[in-house]
Amino acid sequence: MCGIIGYVGKRKALPIILSGLHDLEYRGYDSAGVAVLERGHLSVVKCKGRINDLEKLLESRNLQACIGLGHTRWATHGKPSKVNAHPHTDCSGRITVVHNGIIENFDSLKKTLTKEGCIFKSQTDTEVIAHLIGKFYQGDIEEALRRAVKMLKGSYALAVMAKDHPDRIIGIRNDSPLVVGVGKGENFLASDTAAFLSYTNRVIFLEDKELVTITPSGIEITSLGAKRIAKKEDKILHTKEQVQKGGFKHFMFKEICQQPQIASKVISRYVTSKGQIKFKDFSIDQSVLEKFNKITIVACGTAYHAGLVGKYLIEDFTGMPVEVDLASEFRYRKPIIKDNTLMVAISQSGETADTLAAVREARKKKTKVLAICNVVGSTLTREVDSTIYIHAGPEISVASTKAYTAQLMVIYLFGLYLAGIKKTRSKKQIDKVLASLCQIPSKQKKVIESSKDIKKIARKYLHFGAFLYLGRHLNFPTALEGALKLKEISYIPAEGYAAGEMKHGPIALIDEYRAVVCVATDSFVFDKMVSNIQEILARKGKIIVVATLGNKKIRDCTKEIIYVPSVEEIFYPLLSVIALQLFAYFIADLKGYDVDKPRNLAKSVTVE
Ligand code: AGP
View 1 (spheres, rainbow, N blue to C red):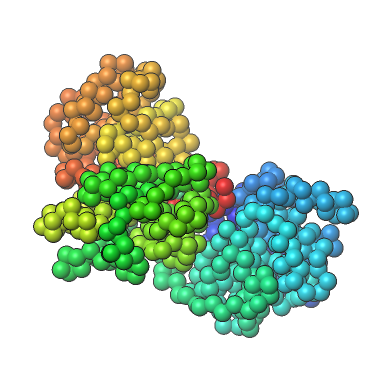
View 2: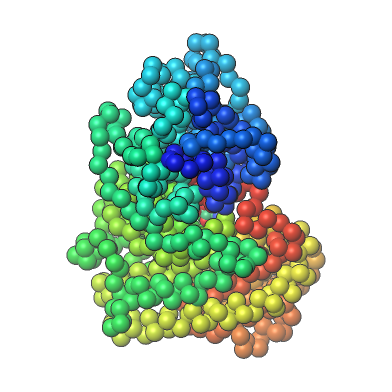
């Protein structure tokens, strides 16, 4: 998704803006631009391509301004090009805007503005906003912005500069994140705290339709009715170093390797020394939780796969039926949610448009919503009844890895917590599961230590044109997640499938050109997996298996085995997925792709 950074203060704006754009690169983009305002002159420089290309263009410009905007564009309306890159300006050239989101009624607005004499240069929806502000501007830039956004339908995070107001940047958000960085004699506006974390960790999170004016000495937040709004300041707890690679070739590999320590951190955060599960700031009363007899989980992508694992676990632990929905489907299928249903929304970023929309749909029906999220203060966490944070630290790589296993850790704990409340598991049984869960980080480390063996197998299979990933029961979501990892960073078609479905169609795909990854760790369905493997081998399919260390039977099937340590069956999702993350990582890296910023993808899908 697009990245926004605005700066106003005592220092030269350009270096701060460009470093902020680099810190937003992980969001994914195809073009970039800046606008600075100096002695009444507005300079706009933009280009298709990377920020380094933009920096080359700026070398010849001696721009000393202390106020400016920067933007990285992830194309929605209009192809990646210089003319479609942000910032955009109005007809007079006095107003400039950067935007993250989608304006759904831009076409009708564009027609009206064109009739009124506006000349459009780009195909973007954003340019409509610049012209609207220009149309309403009569000296009061805040008022012009308020009038303009009242005409807009859709999502937007905006930052605006006006020639006549060289001391201020104005911003407003609706369904798209925008956060204020609070400095000393300087202030920042950005889509994400990562853009200004080098300069300040003091932040103010904006709510929808709150308009902010930042100047070097102040921050004023007002409503669309121009009423002042008092906001509290938050502090960002992680440091910029935590978002650096720290010697790893890619953020993705670093984040895969962080998983054991994060699993330990989740346990230490939520399991007391007496072995009690306690979620800090959990604001849904036990007496309320007891009444729920159904859970519905909504999420997208990797978070959805975590939700699928959650279904197996929570139904096993509590006996409660658990429905899992793709948020993008849930929001449009007129969902039936009964009073005694708890919604659990899983999201790493807390900004995913579909997940937010699904939650809003449930809230309309007065459903209690719990978020499992990684980003403190994100939109999702401010729209639910309670949040359990996964404490995975900033996840920079677009392909989610550490957030997935951290989500799973929270789901294991939440399922056990519910089992305790519903008395479907005794304290002794819960303690036993917790004791095994505490061993998981060391087992995850073992999988990561087998990276070299995994890389060898990856090297042998990186030329295959298509992959099928198979799993059963708890390993079915793992197969889906493994397939997603491979396709999103190596661009190789990879399909996750329930192994039991093979004879219902996919077996037609099998020939010597098809690689099949089977997640066949020890379980009550292991023998069924072996049958699937035999059927594939009988049709010359190439098999790679994730299996339990020490399992001898699997050796009769194939030599391509990625072993994971032996654990109780319910814990394999926390181990086998790491093997598949590494497999996908090595294939993409060996193919020379941009592992952390795969083409067409964004880290947080803040638009539909
Ligand atoms: C995961 O590797 C993908 N980048 C993507 O599917 C992601 O999981 C999905 O967009 C959901 O994001 P969220 O967890 O921030 O809501």
